[in-house]
Amino acid sequence: MGLYQHVRELYKKPKDSLGEVYRQRLIQWRKGDVIVKIDRPTRIDRARSLGYRAKEGIFVARVRVNRSRRLRRGSLKHKRKSKHMRSRKIVAKSYQVIAEQRADKKFVNAEVLNSYWVAEDGKNKWYEIIMVIPSHPAIQADPTLNWICEPQHRGRVWRGLTTAGKRSRGILTHKGKGAEKLRPSLRAHNRLSK
Image (cartoon, rainbow, N blue to C red; front, side, top):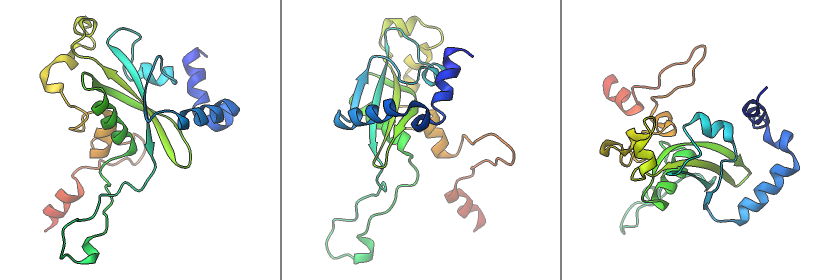
């Protein structure tokens, strides 16, 4: 087995295989900032498979997301029924999409290429986001990455065009026996059935 396959095997059950290293890493990450720009990816195998290259114009950011219930705030207007004041759950976004959007907000000059899970505990989840700077000459000269420099790819994370966004929209499904498409959406399905 090569290096990347060993790393892939370690991250199938990181708590068991990494042990104390994993625990110390989480303690350190909890104390740090929510969004951190890092020198190199923690999971090099996953990053490489999603388009990461060790070159100028590409960097990785680690984002911590709180594992809350992802609720919208209730209405702040007066003279409303109390049952309408409660919060509603946002089911359309996964934690990964939220992490990508926060990284995109933080690094204004960069676009989100893709992201992957790194770690989680009872309270938080950590994702590493691969960011690309479209205005960088090294990216513009790269034939495999210069598609992101075109204007139609601006703000792709906000339109659900990353892998996590497509999965939330129901476009990507898990391959395997008995896998069904999630389209049409629930709203469209209800509209069709009436």
